[in-house]
Length: 219
DNA sequence: AAGTCCCC
DNA sequence: CGAT
Picture (cartoon, rainbow, N blue to C red):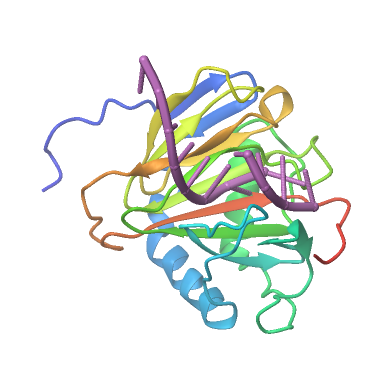
């Protein structure tokens, strides 16, 4: 059955003021969550975006919601249309929106209603360097980050790039919420744990929910 | 500016 | 670093 080693991870861990990790928060809905991801992908396929420095992101991304985050050689921006299809980004599936609101509430952020959802797909070798989420123009609203599939080795830093960095294993169903004093903290993905996941194999999905207040212009 | 390289 |  499922009586191997006991899972000693706390179900709720406060990393520091404003940052709360909810372990296994989404476990019961895993099948439905993966299903809606596939539906979003059908309308807005994953793609490897370019960066202003001339690089290419190793994680593939897509978006849903009123605003989607886009990186190009011209910079970072939120757009209302997928630049690949020239159609609006697909709506945020209700199961995802509800999950994000429930997680934000459990973390102490009561009035969070996301209008932007970024979906990152990591495979073996995918990384994301330390960065801040600061394109949303409303730092009162938290970031809600859901991990699905293969475990990610998440880097959690501080307000400055040189601050100490912790590495946390984010597992299937874990939700990390950060806001308030932690809203602009640096974070990234160092890599993936070697073990495949029963439902997703070698793939890790990360779904982040944001509230975009002031839209940027197209790149 | 979320990449990449380079040094300890 | 060179990009914005």
